[in-house]
Structure formats: C-alpha cells, structure tokens
Length: 501
Image 1 (cartoon, rainbow, N blue to C red):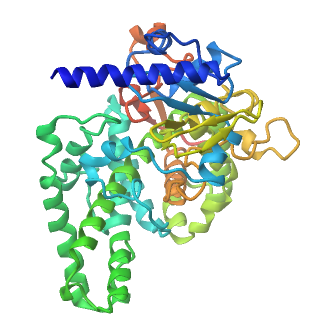
Image 2: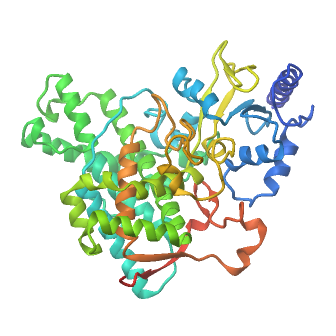
Image 3: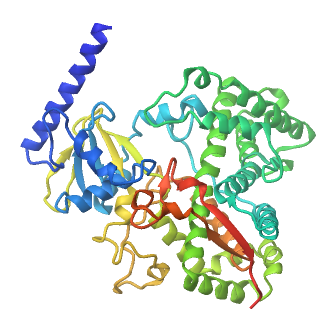
C-alpha cells in the first residue's frame, strides 16, 4: 500500500516537473501551478458550465479565457489525465491525421474494452467498408415517423434521444447484421445486452468490475442470433446468394480467402473472435453517434424556422409536392439524396456546432507538432495524450466567420466569399486513414430522416421553466452536449402534425 502511494506521488511529481520544464522552454500552456498544475484553473473554467456538460467544451472555454493561447498547448491535469497536448487548428490536426498517422491513445482500448475486449477497428487497423441499402433505411425511418405521429396524436412529451437511439439501432442492425431488430416497436435482448455493456464504457475508467468482466451475455445473444443465421444461409447456397450485410460480406471474404464454399467447413477461432468484436463495435458506434446527430439536426431545424422553410422548399422541388410519396420516391430513386445541397448544408452545419466526439492519439519518440504561427515544434513523446478537438476547431472564429451562428449557407458559399468553408476545418468524422469508416452511410441516414420528418412534423424542444438559469445553459443553449455527445436530458420534445401548405 505504501509503495502504491509513493508511486502515485512520484508520477505526479514527474508530470508537474515535465510541465514546468516545457513552460520554461516557451511552449504554450495556460497559467501553471507548480503543485496543482492546471487542476485549479480547469476546475474554475468548468464551474462556469453545467455540471454535466461534455468535456469537449473545455478547450473552447480556454481559448476564450486566454486568447493568445494558440491552436496547440499543453495541459497538466494529473491525476485525472496524463500530460495532454491539445490540438485545435486545421494545420496542426493535419500533421497528426494525414501527414503522419499517430496511433490511438491506449486509454481508447480501455474505453472500448467492456464492449469489444480490445479487438476492434478503432484500436486495430482495418479496411474501409462501403455498402448501404437505402430502401431498408427508408423503411425504418417510416416506422420512426409513425411513432412521431402517435406522439403527436396523443399530445405527449417524449425524449427524442430514446426514439433516435432505436431508429439508428434498427438501421445499423439491418446494414451490419441483416437482422430486423425492431427496437422501435419492442425490446430486443441483443440490444438490451449491448446497452448494458455501454453503461460501463468510460474514457480512462474501469467501470464496475463485476459488470465489466461479464460480457458473455451479449456475446451469447450475438453468436446465437447471427452466427447461426449466417451458417444457415451459407448452407443454402453459394456465396453470391447471401445478403450484402457487413457480416455476410466479411464471411464471404473469409470463405474466399480460405478456399471454402460454406460456413459448415469451419470458421477459424481467431476470425470468429475478431469479427464478433468488430460487429459489436459497429452496432455501438454506428447507432450512438448517428442518434445524437439526428437529435441535433431536428433540434436546429425546430429553432430556426427560416431554415426549416428552405429545407421544405427544397424537398418539394426534388421529392415532389406530396410528402406522403417521399419514402417511395427515395426507395425507387436513391440518387435523389445527392440532389439536396441545402439539406446537406443543414446537416453539416449542425455537426459543426455539435460534433459528437473528439479523438485522441499517443506520442512517439522524437515526434513533434509544429505551431503554424510561431514555427515552434511541440514534442509529443510516448505517453503524451494528444487531444484532437474538433469542437474547438469548428467554433474558432479564426476559421469560421460568425462561428457561433447557425448558417447553413456557408456550405454553399464559393471560394473567395466570406463564409466559404476553409479546407480541413470541418472534422466531425476526422480526416486521413483513420477517419470514420461509415461517414457516407451516416450522411445518407441523416438525409433520409430529414427528408421524411421535416415536411410532416413540427418538433419543439420542451425544457422546464426553471431551466432558464445560466447554470443550465452553454452559450445560451439549453440543449448543450452531455455524456457521449447527446443533448442534455435526452432532448425532451413535443411534436405536432404539420398543417398543409
């Protein structure tokens, strides 16, 4: 016990000493205390935000508090974080994601371990997959619209995030597993087990050990439902007869590489283990981030009626004047989704203001990141947490004119115009080889939801009267980001059926 305490304080001493040395060499960081590091400063900054506000608000708050801090600086928050190098500009972010691809920070594996046991594409290397089935996404979104219709008729309050969670899970279940999870209409044991595991995912935390080391319930549901289904399909015909879900594409590639024609010839233990954990991660990341983004797109449309009017006009022009026919038109002619520039602009602008996640990397020997302003090379040694903060980058007025305003038209501006978007400044999916592997799928899903919801419903966020106090808002915004990037309190809403005209 005594040795553990001594080691704890020794590590703290080492980090404080390192931060003091970096500051003495002229590297940027906020005012640093020799004993407390940046803990007191960060506590003061965060005290001005709601207690449940997402940590990604912190770098933007530091930029406002210390305007000369710049786009790259160190933070010393031991024992809560190892020495951190915060990176917030397109030029510095490019050095890490495109010019040289640093590995993920080790704590990411700890974060995902309750879900994927350390065997996932985020922690490992993997190839991009690109396949989607728009009619199935449309079908699930129609179910979502019917649920909104029922809420409208009942005139009841509901939590939008719960509805979008189920919608996104049904879509990703169909795309990844070729399974009809039907989460929007009933409880699903596989999804329930996945969500129980998600409760213990905490960046840098270990969670409840009694729950963390009991992943078998989800694995058993997953293997029984999907592997048995895939085996049955494989015995019924050749590879070309199987569906085009992610799991079937993976099995087809595996069988081809192993000169086999069906699953009954045997699936290798290593392949099965890795594939199982990848698919669990697809279910998690493919539904959670999309769900939160759907919430924010619908929310921004609800509080900006002039934008909503233009979106509806675009849909009338491209999809036809009758909203009830939009679903069939999209299913029959998916290419129409590529003819909605203003709708796409609304989605991108919502994601600019409310990116669901940032990402992290770890340093390597002799690796440095150059400050584009001063030319100073910041060392990023092994063990340094490099925090790539898209939220701070996407709200920085140095890169975004009128950065706090919701302006979809900036995405339609031509080069040379004031609002033209600077290359590399928009990063909700990140850039480079380790960018989000399902960004095209996510954008399609978001477009479909906007197309089928916006002309049929008027959605209103409903927060309590007592919530008007400043400690329940961020930049005047009540639906600020919490948890894993979702709106506060899961976005309580009411919905009305839109009057024609």
